Length: 135
Image (cartoon, rainbow, N blue to C red):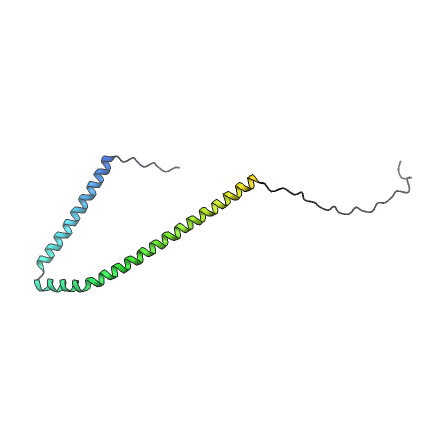
């Protein structure tokens, strides 16, 4: 059994999907920001200042760690891509080598040499001296 063909999606359907997705993202963002605003309004000023100071102190370390992890991730991704590309290029080179060898073999076939085998030695010849048994 073959796979069922996916339905064609019209431009209007795509537009409706994008608008619904954008609406959901906006509602979630507004909800998060409103929740944060309400939480900040309930906190005392001294506590809020202490949290802001701690965030200011931790911010450079967080930026450094994020940049370092980001660089490591990017390096890993690039190495993975290089490995994949190298594998693909090696496979393409092998295919090309096989194709060239096959074309050369078809264009200039190697001469077929006949196989020479030595025959086994003949048994010694026995001469019939008495012809009386032949009738």
